[in-house]
Length: 406
Image 1 (cartoon, rainbow, N blue to C red):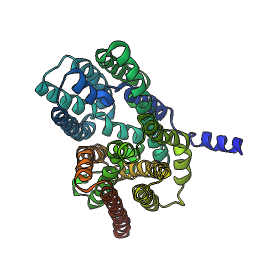
Image 2 (image 1 turned 180 degrees about the vertical axis):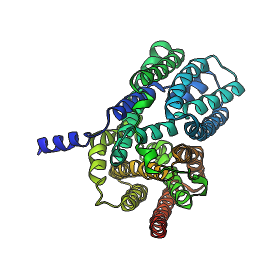
Image 3 (image 1 turned 30 degrees about the vertical axis):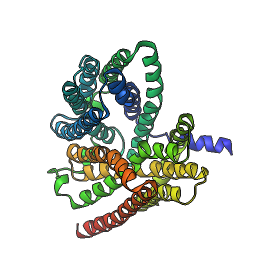
């Protein structure tokens, strides 16, 4: 039984190109290296003495810069190709991370954070285009899942390493390490990946003129559903921890263990799970609808009982929903981009949608809790996710009509 499970786990990683593995490793270095981000609010309040109001505006600049960076990344990727955009984003953002520590004024920090996020997040749409170029079409979902695994591992290791660096050297050391790791990731990218190694599978699938995602009704419905899903999902990084603390009186270490369960499950089973459901006999739209339903149940169950065990059940439901939802959302976007031969603009809108959700989700969740309380907020999140399911059903019908008319 154990040997069979281990063999199945190993098989889920087979068939992925060497270039995709390098992309995952570079992404791991990059995400583990951007360890300033989890400590940014602490740095601004404790080290620079800014008020929470100032921090709110700085985080708004962070979110707006992320949206602009994703849009710009798509445009630059279409014009110059993913290769140039990715290595320049890594190297230039490395210098910007180092320079950020020398800016002390509120206005200067706002501008610097905005510019940093514009440069850093041009990387994201280019990364998705690179994955599509370096992998076979049938391996796209698993390739994206491997990149997600690298991102999750990076975000898991980064804060722990960052905390140790702050204790040893202060925030200055953190900025230097962030800058050096971004630069190192860029230099490694130049060393191990070259433009001529990218396959032409994406371009070959959709010769001719480029389609526009802004005129694509199917893609618009998809992005709206994704925004609703992302809006609810992001509560797990802002309002849900508060709920654990204020309502269930969990300590910081207990909250940490519960959140770590999500990362552990993703590391352990996401690849084999996605590999299994990637088979043609499973409907993409059914996978998206069921995984979104799991998200909805993870919120609804919080109102069912005051028993602390529902928190673990909710986290399990959310984790399985996340493992199935986001890789296949990525896959749909990449396939649509390939279909209309416009990887840059399509993947830019994809990443921008999640960035926009970041801007609104955290503050809106806090305001809902303030005015309506936790129970009503969880019902609202459940309702938003059920609406997303209806949009996914509508999306499936639109795609069917599109194919029938072709």
